[in-house]
Image 1 (cartoon, rainbow, N blue to C red):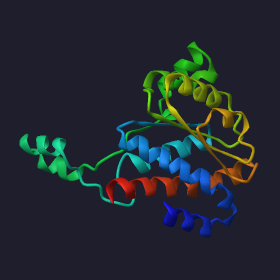
Image 2 (image 1 turned 90 degrees about the horizontal axis):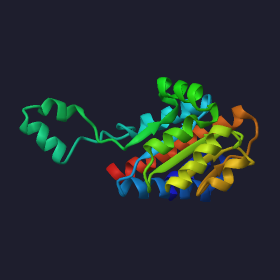
Image 3 (image 1 turned 90 degrees about the vertical axis):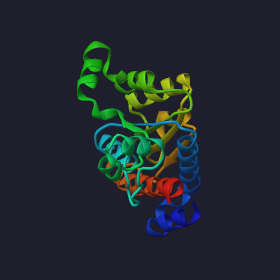
Length: 207
C-alpha cells in the first residue's frame, strides 16, 4: 500500500498523521474480502452519500475492468449467454445501509430512529464481515448503536470520523480520524481516503 498511501499524503499533507490508520483500514478490508466476507457501510446525510459512493466503487469495476471469471462465467456460457458473461464484472460484496428507504422508515416507525443501522447489521451481518461506519462527529447515535451490535455479532469495525473520533472510537477496531472538526472539512478529506482504499483493494484483488 505504501505507494498509494504516499501519493495520497503528497496530495493531502494534512492527512500525514492518519497514515497508520489508513494502512490498517486497507489491510482489514483486503483481508476480509479475501476471506469471502462482505462489507456493510453506514453514514448519515453526506456520509450516507459517501457510503453509497464506496459501494459503487466496490461492487463493479472502479479503475480496472474486472472481467467475469470462474464457474459463474462457465455456467452462463453453457446456458448460451456469453453476452451476459462478457458484460458482467467481478464485484466485491458491499451494502450501503442508508439506501433501503422502506426498511429504514419501518424501523424508525416501528422500533426507534437510533436503530436504523443496528437492525440492519443484526439482519445482514455475519461473523467476519466488516462494518464501515462514517460519522463526522463520531457521536451519531445510530452509528454508535450499529457499531455496538456489530461487535456483539462478531463483525470487524472500521470508522471514518473527524478529529475527536467521538463515542464511536472505542467501538472501532480501526478508526481513521481526519484532523478537522467542521462537517464540511471532515467530509472533504473522507472522500480521497475512501477513494484510495477502494482503488488499492481493487488493485490487490483484480490487478
